[in-house]
Image 1 (cartoon, rainbow, N blue to C red):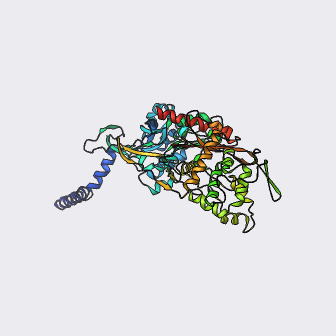
Image 2 (cartoon, rainbow, N blue to C red):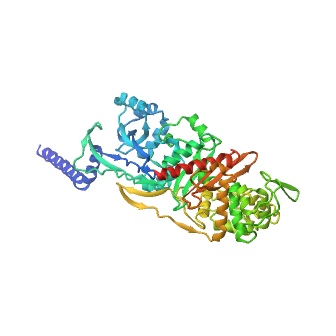
Image 3 (cartoon, rainbow, N blue to C red):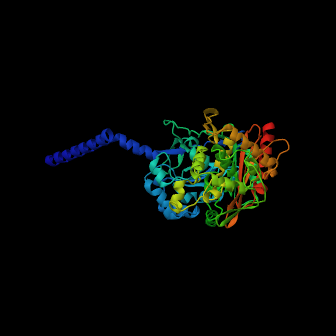
Length: 575
């Protein structure tokens, strides 16, 4: 009996020893780990998304801000497949897609964003089925808002959901976050984005929130910085109104004095707010398949033959090479010009003109003859000096360098020695392979207006943080070597274009406007209409370039638009 009692006592002592060792191991060696696991069950970390920085025009008009929206989140450790199946049907999201979004983080104890910008109907459905949806929460988050909808779709740009590649490159982004895709939103993403905050709440065994956790201090979100654009909202609205009857157009206004963009419009447009809600598939299909390409920024991305707006450049190149003087007359214009076996046309019969008169009346025959006297190498070199054939460096993405055909380009395209000097007839009137963007033409005319220099164009004037200016854009001046007397003569001709020539539709009774019309051929469709002008002619302050696709004559269509914009600009300035 005594032996049995001893054995029982020994077994009990051994068991208590084992238990004590196990408790010591769990408490002393693994205690910190299990404390963390306990906290994960008791404590929930809530991400507080940072509001995106606001965007204003030059006068403080709010162009982009944030608004509150409903976000559907799921806590992976507190839900189940039955709840997820129901949730997928309520938010019209395929179950497989819902599981895919949760798959990499199934053991995550904090809310994971599943569906942003949910409309009130979806929120009501989820609340009605709340008892069947464990681990599903509704959160109020900031979402981007564009109060003027389409008006700034190509200037401010739009946002899109972060991609898997972007998530892999930058761990500070979360799934379903929005990032800048085009315009100012893209080029200033890091400035506008801000920094997310977080807070900790205590939950019970059922996952219900008890309240804030006192021992863990929350970190508030840091809003993105605010941006002030150089855009004048009043002029932007007017440009939109003046071009609303045309399917495809571009308007660009730029300050001669510093390169600030005061107006940038491309038509057709789109509403960037559509990316924050569920898009109807048929609507999206019609949008992306629209032959007019509403996502395409024609003001900076699309190259066009400049037509007669290029003639001042040809004139300056000829004056530089001393091929002509301002008073030089060539063979009179009879309405046609014969070269080889081809007949080249002029839009009218002008008779005998000198160089300045040929610019004023936009006489093709005069410039055909001028083109034959110029060499391709000399013209190309001069154009490059003016900044053509390359990007201007504007501070938004998507700019095209256009196309400036050189001897090397023509050899590649047609074969070495297989193109003739007849090519220069087209180049001399801004046709053929020469392609310029509205931004490039506006910058070119800034150089003419300033008599030999221009400023790199820019859209953002300053960046503010909590109302304090942290950065201002400093204009970058670019000097061009041009004989000042030559450019003064060409400016006289551009003033006469509006007073007496093809640009009379842009005239203003009190402000002297200078500029040039352009009617660029676009076979087999109708011609493109151009006008580029600056004012006042005697002391230029602003340049406007207008391009209307397939609209006909520049003097009829584009010149009146520039005239109205210049009137509005000086009216606003006076006020």
